Structure formats: structure tokens, C-alpha cells
Image 1 (cartoon, one colour):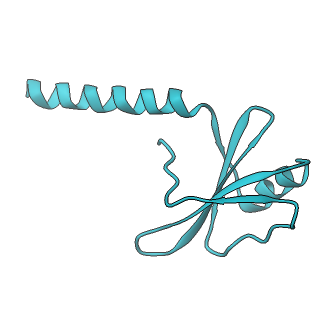
Image 2 (tube, one colour; image 1 turned 90 degrees about the vertical axis):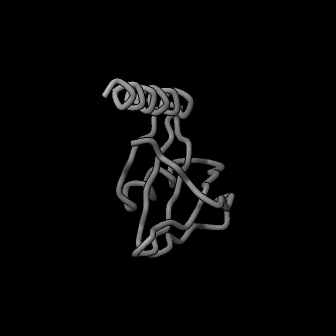
Image 3 (cartoon, one colour; image 1 turned 90 degrees about the horizontal axis):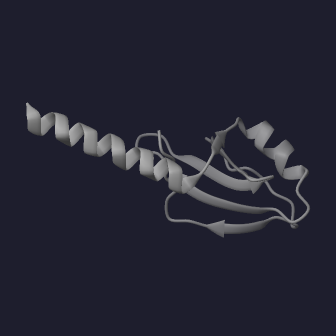
Length: 94
């Protein structure tokens, strides 16, 4: 089982490295995401669709050095002041 243990250690190291590269990601509920968004003067939001069985909408934005993430089963509605970047996929380390 040495190979299995080494493989698990390599996977854990890869996840740790991905977390370091991505910085702090704060998962919030959609209403909290919208509240934080309203405090931003020129917000930039990254959006993507996800889900295998049930479609969901995923959102990322930066605020005061943190990255906030939320997902919703229905699309969130943004004001015209929000700059939107559509991504093919959003991956959040677990």
C-alpha cells in the first residue's frame, strides 16, 4: 500500500498548493453576496454555470482582499454598474 499512501500524499499536497495559489475564498449565501456587492464601488463578478444533475449559477468577486463565492439555483440579478466576466468553469478547492 505504499503507492496508495504516496498517491494520497501527492493529492493532498496538490490541494494545499491550489488553496495557497487561490488565497482565501469565503463561501456565502446569495443574499450576503449581494449585500457585499452593494458595498463595492466598481464591482467585478465572475460567473459560470455548474452542476451535473441540477444546474446552478456560480459567482466570484473580490472585496477587501478576500474572494467571495456563492452559488444559486436561479440567476442573480445585477445592476448595470457591475462588470461581468463569464467563465467556462469556476473551481473552488475543498
